[in-house]
Length: 131
Image (cartoon, rainbow, N blue to C red; front, side, top):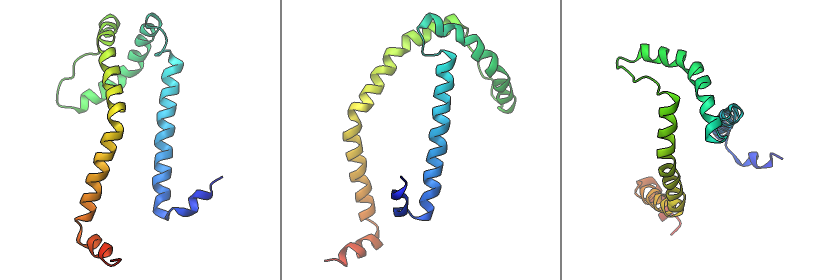
């Protein structure tokens, strides 16, 4: 099952384990949010907001005490509902624009990365050693 691991250097194990931990935390967060009912129909998900506000308030107060700036209060559920409704479509549009531009952006960043690597003198010597 883990035969591919033999191809990684020992320093790669920390990268793999770091990614696994981050992926696990993200998965647990999504699972918890789903269990609380955030992604249910809007009339049901608005009911979850007071529970989240109750749980988050002590943490927000702790962070507020450590920050020298005054943070605004958490919005009420009816205000939050209207804000979410107004911004939902914008979020969907931005997400799909990102996904549609991803192949081009990846190619562009890859080419820039290759150009930056080729500018390194040691890499130039290494490439020229094969000529």
